[in-house]
Image (cartoon, rainbow, N blue to C red; front, top):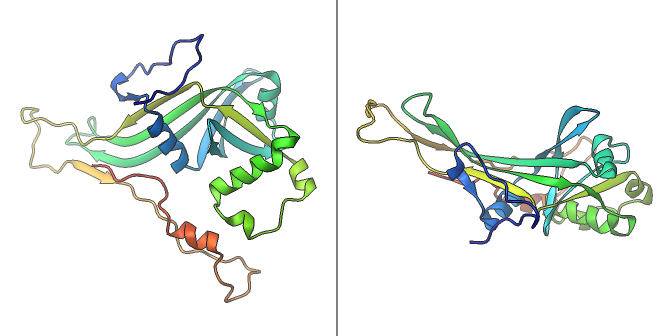
Length: 229
């Protein structure tokens, strides 16, 4: 088992509540990040906490997000070298126990901490292309290239994955033969399965226009949640 890297001058972060659910398996972290599309970026601006959902992509050992040049708090946090947090969660199942108190969820969650680095102009094109390919594989080859003004209006920020804590639950309802519960009452796991729906063409797309290969491939691809029992 490989471990999630941490800074050499700081002890690894530890989960305090239900500490046994912490995982340091790097492959599990990669699976989570590559299977989801939206995370939440948190920072403090003028003493006020701000949390914003953002599309993202893991590229190598970092998370990349992008936004407008007027993107506000994220660019400011990068400029000020302020520590931010970026969280990603996948809900895999609901766990039905024989009491509401013992009912739960199966999930995978991770929070990465660090300082955002703005990707420089010499890397911007490649970073935007990699981000697009992560979210919509193959689409870049089907549409026009990015215009200079579009690139100029966009900023890409990178958060290194060297300070991450991950927590998971992946098992059934808590039960025991002598737990005093009525075992005639059903208990178990209801997995959450996600699939892409039928593509819906835009209003200006001519009738009969064939689906591009990128869309066709997407609709046959699993979304990222796992069947857990």
